[in-house]
Length: 340
Image 1 (cartoon, rainbow, N blue to C red):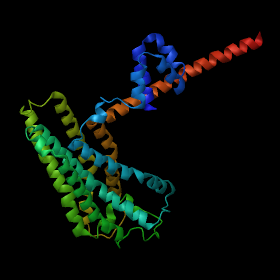
Image 2 (spheres, rainbow, N blue to C red; image 1 turned 45 degrees about the horizontal axis):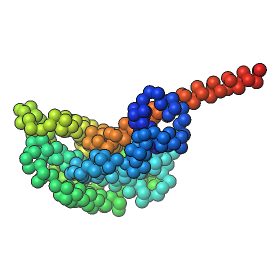
Image 3 (cartoon, rainbow, N blue to C red; image 1 turned 60 degrees about the vertical axis):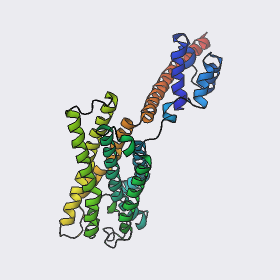
Image 4 (cartoon, rainbow, N blue to C red; image 1 turned 30 degrees about the vertical axis):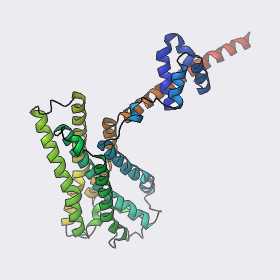
């Protein structure tokens, strides 16, 4: 439907104003299809609607390292979003009916998500560093095979480090006979495994954070001193937008979560509900919203889809308004005929 609406608008630009009423007064797909067949540009437009344009850059564009990283970010977001209905059911009913194992899986995902996300953001930062600061060696360093191996390695190491959470004996939901699931929004249940947590904090937070800071400092220095003159203005603006989005995402979503995580590990009290732990977990979950902005900046295809949705909604509004007007005129004419 999005493709159909987009090319109906494109047809309108081709045929001119004199065909406007003829096209939009008949919103049914079969009528628009018949009208397209009668038009002299029909072969090209029908080919776009059925097979797509062979010259379209969205389908023929070569895959890059940034595409590999964004595909992994999208996969991670998809896994996180798939479990949102369970969270909503729990928040709405204040009762967890799905069993202890699913609660443990969601609790492990709460830790798994920032670990993978931070490394993927670090990879994107390094990719921008190589594109801006080292453009001569970018083709050699930005290898797709290496990017795939790096992403696979992070997934494997993260899953291996979070698997013990599925079998942890220290469970905050035991007191309620597992009718609650505090693990999905409170990280206080992780305190007992302090050795593993400190390793996790260093490897999955400090190292990628330092990588990002180092890349950003060098990139900013290069931009300020004009060492990126060979870079195209559009590519430079795109890189700056990506960097700003990553900085906001890390500072707002991930830094508070891990700082609270570190303080909770240093506390000597037994496991209790932590409002700050719940709040920072909420901030970390907001990262999925900021990822949408990152998709829009990085992917031209995503931008085209957003524009198509906007065009389609505008088209539906115009059809509804004209349908209401047509219906009002017809009802008025029927009333007049009955009176006569």
